[in-house]
Amino acid sequence: KTASGQLRDSTIDRKTMANYKLSALIVALAASSSAAFLAPNPKPMAVSHVHPLAMSTRSTTKTSSSSTTTTSPPRPKRTLRDRSSEETVSLLRDIVQAAYDAGPRAAPSRTLQAYIAISRTLQDFSPIQRPGRTAEEFSAPVALRKLFERLGATYVKLGQFVASSPSLFPEEYVLEFQKCLDSTEPLEWSIVQSIIEKELGPISNSFSYVDKTPLASASIAQVHTAKLKTGEEVVIKVQKPQIDDLLKADLNFIYIASRVLEFLQPDFERTSLSAVATDVKSSMLEELDFEKEASNIEEFRDFLRDQDLTETVTAPKVYSQFTTKKVLTMERLRGVSMVDAESIRGITNNPEELIVTALNTWTSSVMNMPWFHADVHSGNLLVLDDGRVGFIDFGMVGRVGEKTFQAVGELSGAMALSDYEGMAEAMMNMGATDEDIDVQKFGRDIEQVMKDMSNVAPDVAAVGVSGDGTVQAAISFDEEEVTGMLLKIVAVTEDNGLKLPREFGLLVKQSLYFDRYLKILAPGLDIASDSRMLALGSGTEVEAGTVEVIV
Image 1 (tube, one colour):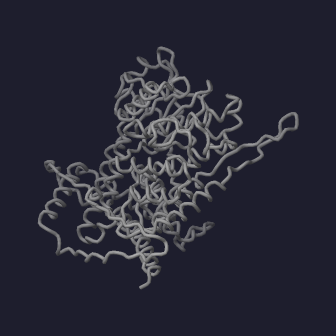
Image 2 (spheres, one colour):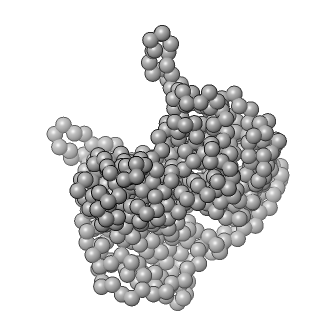
Image 3 (tube, helix red, strand yellow):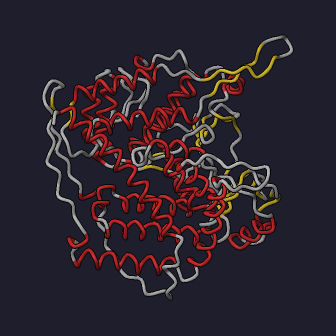
């Protein structure tokens, strides 16, 4: 075969594996609704795991675009007969541990819920419909998204994980799961009240007022505004009843299903399916611990103090005496979204300085903290009434390994110089590949993506006319636009034979959010020459600055 033919085949193989991964995940989800864990609780067993990704190694050869690219011969496929006794024992230990964690009552209720959810989803696409209704045209991503929403909290969160992981899942699923709704019917006040009082004692002892109408209601928690006896305005985030047991049972089922699939079909290990399930499990269970989220907020506030940023940036104060694993009480921050340009101009006459401050704060946190805020969409990044930037919702955070962080620093430096081949080399240093990579071609592909990004403009829409006849306009951008740009970056890396870690995708997505905010609030800012901008890996302000996206 020619080099181009081999490259084309390898691209097809990668896309095929991505779809295998999604298919395997669907099978795992189906398995998670079975009653396989009905035995009485056994004693937990000590389990020692080696993360599959930690075992991977990488050897990359850089070639010029004119040279012939060669690939290593494919490794022989493993079969079930190749499994060792140690691997069998490890799987059995995992099954026993999952059964213990899930408990004997989890499977029956989830089996019934799964049956109802699957039936309703199938009915949406069935040619036999009730009078006045027509069947929807079948689409696997749409069907799976509807099923996830009907299965409840675990699967809504799983859908959000798919949406935020374009380096792991096919594009059509990532785009569809952007629509996965994390909004539920609010619980009755009596239920919320009982949870608060079980965790904190009588409401009247701590709060002078609690609004019985929720500010928001999502799959895991419900939020109410309140006022402390001492006068401070707060919000109370209340975890919904039994949600922790539900998530633990579901996530254990999903993990075990993925382990069984990999055991029975060893070639599935190439997809790191159980590693993805482990990542999903740890990420979701961490969101259940409101004391952990409170700790994240306090750690970010300490960071702001250490960096002398408290006069320009803040995060909610946590009232630890009114916070438990299931109830989080924190300061209420009043402000507007980072994309509400008109309201922001009513707060400050220098929106450019404000967005530079927000971006530098986030960039500095990536460099100086063990984790970073991994969900800085416009609802979680506010401009407060007093002109400060407010970061809220620290339930989702990302962590960057030393290898990735070093490569991100190299990438940032190459971006500042518009060195696209240097960017390609930096991305190769953080990714995994089984084949040689044409650095010059990779660099040209990256250059094209960067040009596409610089050509994207925010949407401007007329929203009304003031009394003096002036047209009022709103500037915004579409969430799907951010995801679309991230998918382009992922596609370029995969087409060039590279697989990037999930944390890099999280970093880039936050950077794309900031790129859009810059276009809205500081459209005339010359980022490439602005000395105020921080670049990852520099630790200080750099004279050369950065380009469109700072990661």
